[in-house]
Length: 137
View 1 (cartoon, rainbow, N blue to C red):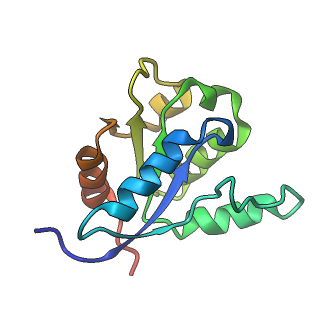
View 2: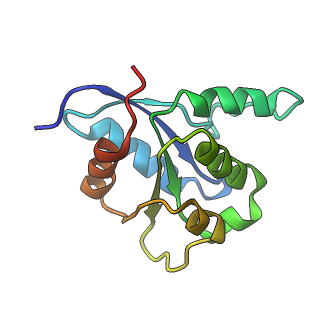
């Protein structure tokens, strides 16, 4: 049985394709014996993109035990998603790629991150988070 703890998770996703993000949130919320805190920037609570945006994003991501990346080719065209991945690597924050159903290609920025990638199954994603997440406390 996994050790009980609260996982601080940052989900990197594209707002224009946010159905997968909401599915992950629902999975995590509904998973028994999985306590988590969502550090993501969602479309429901966006951060204003001003001169302090990067600083606020660094703070959120820096508090994460793990970053989950919804793998899709739109990452290649989204500055902030690529930036999040690169910054997580610099800060040694574990990165987990999740391949949605039907996805076949992995963007270069994700390949360069050399992170584990799991398929679109709740138990695979939650299990990988439990295994990979760093414990900052």
